[in-house]
Length: 276
Image (cartoon, rainbow, N blue to C red; front, top):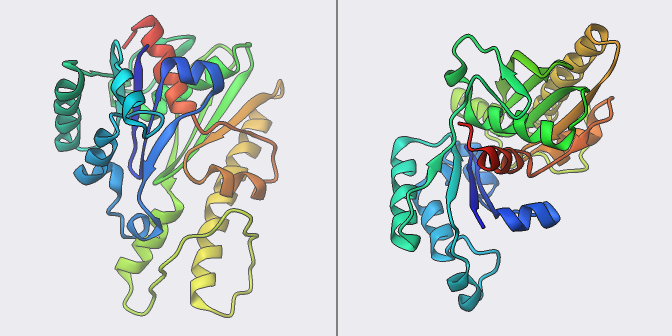
């Protein structure tokens, strides 16, 4: 049984391999909307990591269960700073006398060929998401993988499994945080909520910003999907993941699968072949 950890910019997620295979469920720690907007987010902050460690990364808080959940190996995908990664390594040593294995982007693995100019420079979360998507859709279909979090990434893999690169744009919380920091007269203190519809006429500044950033993200995603539909007449599977996936997916003109555990599924797949 291996422990899989996904350290993102705004959330820290983890699952045990047996748990993920059995029910596609994971555990998570995340800061509230205020920390997201301020861009001082918990998963890149040591206190957030320490809170996860106090539960020993257990699926429940019962002490007996936590004590019994000892992984064979810890595999990590992290986009956090060196200080957080170092502390995570120390925690694994303190809890289980294990050194975590940090996943790295590579040239090819698990049916995906990375044609990035410098393959190792591809964000490891994007690499793991592509691998997870290939596991989810093992056919020869092309893939479009969309991750909506602190940043929005849009990555296309052709039917031969080749990835040539993608697009990155600011996520919803990042856009709102940027407006807050860059203006004196605009201050938005909350994020859009799932179920919100895009409105083009807003009589209050808060709603004007909220709907503006929603429209920017949804329009960018729909435009990318339109582009690849014209490029690939054979069709492709679109998978969306990330903290804002359930907010964005209903607003798109296109059908897509929402897979919250996509990066963890990629870590799991890479851990099985140990190709990183």
